[in-house]
Length: 150
Image (cartoon, rainbow, N blue to C red; front, side):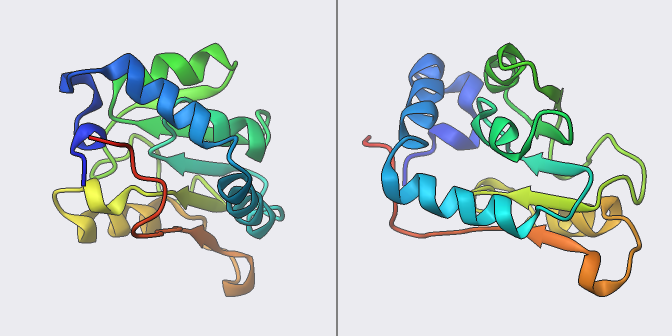
């Protein structure tokens, strides 16, 4: 697997990483699964997208109700150009209060975390303490799909 997305800003082609994410989001199969994740989170009033990349999914989730976080300054800048609210931070220590979000999405993020358990604990922490049927976490992980060459 390419290590580009484990540290985008130190990779050999940060601009290419942004462009790849934006391009991949237009592929029909990828667009379909992304739409499914948006649908799973449609009842949540405020959604956090961890590893938001260039902000394509923030637009899909709804700019007025979604917040993105990414550790890459380059990805955060790209997301901000879409008019999205973005925090440049690490998934291991989210800069939000406990119970801030009704929904959380982390698409192809956990394989890049040094401590996936810590990232999962942060998701649980920032999710609002609602009735179980109203608590939403969407963490799609499709191994072997849509890998960037190299």
